[in-house]
Image 1 (cartoon, rainbow, N blue to C red):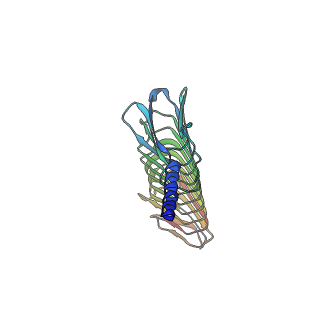
Image 2 (cartoon, one colour; image 1 turned 135 degrees about the horizontal axis):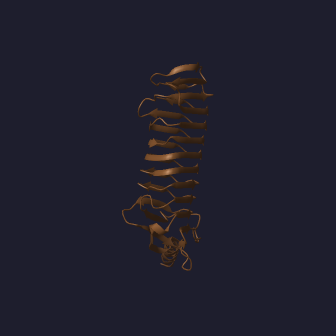
Image 3 (tube, rainbow, N blue to C red; image 1 turned 90 degrees about the vertical axis):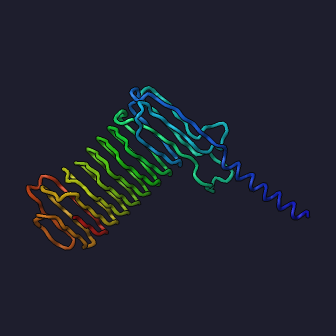
Length: 285
């Protein structure tokens, strides 16, 4: 009986500890008049971030998660003149090295074309975005997955150390994507100026529209570029040390054709496509 009682106390102690580590529920909601805000900046450590469009004239931020430290909020929101700054920092617990499910999510609803700049500095949380329209968007990501759909912007810059990047059904006047480790998938995106670079990871660009300049480079990763409609005026350069390059484009006139390099033009070559890979296959169609 004594041994059984001791086991119960120990087990109960562990259950109690786990509950304390998980923390209490934390919820927060606040709104701002969109016409008075020019920039939204988010500095996020590990919570998930979800952006979406709203028909309201207000920017609404909703936070749902866990709070470990009763004296400090895990998410703080400041309004400094024409800028909203949001900071999410992880709070230390007894068993910080263990993970017990999702820590929290930040939901941001933004009216279309009301905000000049969206800046997100993300460490480990996943990022979702749908039907957002802004002038400038800058996302710096350490290791979260990024899934963006229906984005409209003048300039978009996305950098990632690790994690999959997906951009779909979007339109940008200038797009820059740079990743260290992680695959990049760009589908049905219109951008006259696009630059995609990766150290380790494949790059897939589907249903692309012919633009002024498309540059794709990987050090170790396959590259695939496909056009929604056949280009009519293009200068193409493709180089790969893997000796595996395939180009299937209508009216493509080859100027150079080797295992590691293919160059040529379509029409009067007003636009440019340059694809480079040190260790990876290249397919263009």
